[in-house]
Image 1 (tube, rainbow, N blue to C red):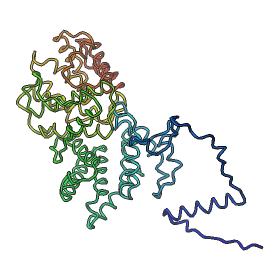
Image 2: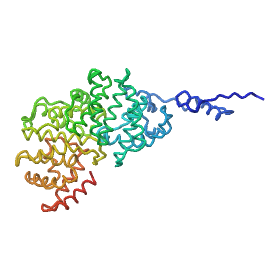
Image 3: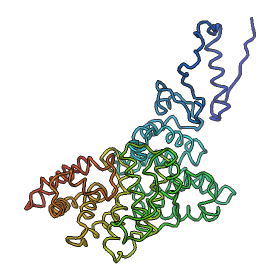
Image 4: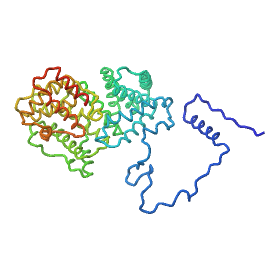
Length: 474
């Protein structure tokens, strides 16, 4: 009788080598006694003629871009077949799948940036970087999913991953790894998680820690990975919008963006050297931000799709300059026109943040208060087209709920003073200001029609009912 050889594998271990051995021996048993036949060269078909269509592979296509098969399943649909290197990850597949299916679209705006597969691959790389990144990323995914589904309380699994992330970060504080990029990413994710849950004090503590870590590393310019520098700045910009604080991090890469776009032949990418007469009284830095926003809007309205990372860099470059010029917690500016342009551009940037179609999910109450104060200080008969733009941009972004009751009659009044009777007339009056059809057209039109339907003598309850109709769209 032939001697049987047994090899025992410790099933309590979850390292990569143990899993590889288990799969190897399982397949040996499954294929025992079977003959595996390789297809002959004839069965593979004739060679592809010169000049014919190239097969779709993951290799370079010759232009430096990765070639993706149109018939291959999306990345998010293949997760269930992946052997994950982190213990416990299969339990989180639903969270990851929902995040990739819904949340990434809301955060990175495919209407403006096209395919998000590279973004999803980036999130997978962060997820698998190490244990700290894994727990922080899953915590953030839980928080985003709870936020989108309207769940008020933190799930038990979310709390578990949060506690694990904090514990692991704390364990590295007295080690050389304290200032590692992994820890910086973790702290950045914890800031986002706290802001989504409305935890200002917690977010402030983490933000102070991230600033200190960056200082000890030599500043933002010493971060090798460019996308990380963008993310750190964007997080601080988001914090400044929520709580009115100035920004200690600063990044303006619009010159690089213009050079990249100009290389692709887009004329709107040419940076204006002289200001138009309409904005000649603005501070020079504010003039340039207005032109940058107008140029980017013109590109998108022409059908251009921007790389997701470039889009984030544009948002950070604009936001950094706006907050440096005037943070929301400072006293009002003396010049109404200057403050109105600043408030309108701040509100405009919020329309890029976390939305699905015309719906928006984040409400920046401090930006809303700032814009509302500017509108109420409006000068009668002067800059009426700017005031109308503020009302519409505000109504589809940071002004909502009870605010929609007073917005409607003001829109109707200002439009009447300009002789405007149609949505087309409204849109024509917005030509000097930034406006992106893919983000603003649908909800802006609904707001206009609501304003036209609201009787001049409508009661507060009637106005709220009509506002509720708009909110169902927004």
